[in-house]
Length: 314
Image (cartoon, rainbow, N blue to C red; front, side, top):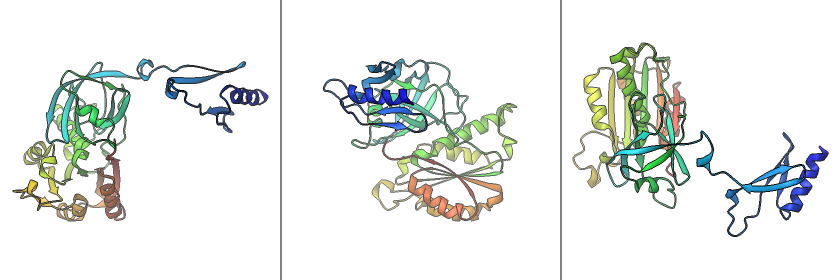
């Protein structure tokens, strides 16, 4: 304890009475160093020795062993001015479960993106929405990239927004890019049936029913409507309902599908498909306000609701 107090005293002397505090759990020292001109604070790290504190340049994230790999953009498709798809070829093998996300970065700025691809696909497919500055930080940088450019990639996928194989019915609710994990789950599910993969964690995959409700302001924001419509037409256990919330605007001229916010339609389609809390899990992914409303509507009605939030600011 005496040594810790001595360290704290040395710190105060060394950094010019910088603010510091003692963590009662570890008796460790937390320091806030004043930033000096030309020496960004984040480029230095404080170390303690028995002779007092000393500083040395911190290692850049890219040099921390095992923290990063890279991936190359092999393909890009622009759907609108604010929505596009990219395919990444990882420098090394990349494993994930359907519904999980990867973390990519440009110039040291990182964000997490749910993966569209099935784990059996060789490339990582992403569906990205531009968030303009000043709120957007990474997506403007990603928007400037072209085929052949590279991004950093964390070597491990993360996330628990995966299929729960404990019930028969799975209601997927999404807004725009929130449909991404559902596409990954469906692709893998159908591949599992076709290949009869005994190693799959899914139990009796052919017995599942999938109901996808996707909402958007405009019809051109549905990045996977053609794929999902095709799957629904080919498989009796897959159902897809896209809905636009601004049907009277010119961009939606000719739209003949469902209208209204997707969260306001949940009860209608639960009744239509005869879903019950005891045999159904609800998944909500996308806009936080949509998710909260779904939880209020269906969580309070006894349904298990799994959520994955996509915030506008990136």
